[in-house]
Image (tube, rainbow, N blue to C red):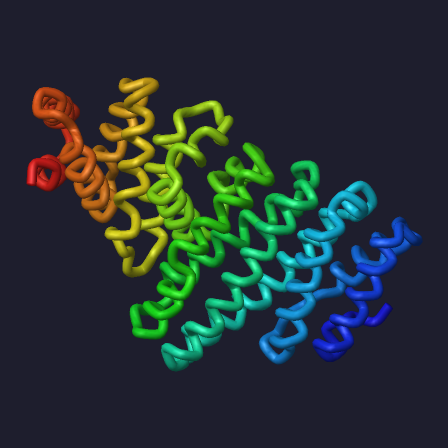
Length: 325
């Protein structure tokens, strides 16, 4: 079968309608499932095939939704989700090029919306088809999500970057949460695990926690407190970005720490103390901002006790001053 992205949107719709009819009549279900998986594996995106890409994944989600009970047992979910991931990476490359090449805000915004569309398609398909067993494909999309944020954090400040950030916004966080729920704890571990996109991982986890704190924390099954994981990721992200945007890295760790205080206050406080003792000046600056935001939500006696612990820990004067202010 030739890749569908070489066809017109109408031809793609006709093929999916044919598959839909076969599934509706329960005709050759296994054969249709193989054909769908094969076509999904062939999907790519390079910016020139926008209409076919949007059509293909819209039709895939439509058929998967209407015929899920028929096809779910036979369709290779990993092949389909891997195809979306490949297309998403292609779209992300287009965004990277737009931001690096000085494109207009409108161009960057349009390209970012394609990324958002594909992430939402992935989330919808993962929820319908069920996630494949934890494997390289699961880790691959976690890496893709971190790469999305990596580009937004490391691109030079510009109106185009601001437009791309706005285009993704809270909808990206919501789609990411849906993927986390569909894939479960292994996916959260992949998001939080080692990566070459440290700036992206820090921003991804921070924004997820800021928007959907408890839902994300409940899925984490690591061997250490999740608050510490998020806090360290945010600080590592700040160090990895050439011009870190601290405003995007503060609230997520604060939400994680407040959730941790309800379960194990000692672990939350230990994570805060370690952050304040960081060697890098930027890390200490971010730690001070997180301390300040965290303390602002504490009742007075707890705030005073925590400040005393911070001062006793040997944290630098700059961190203590930032936390007090």
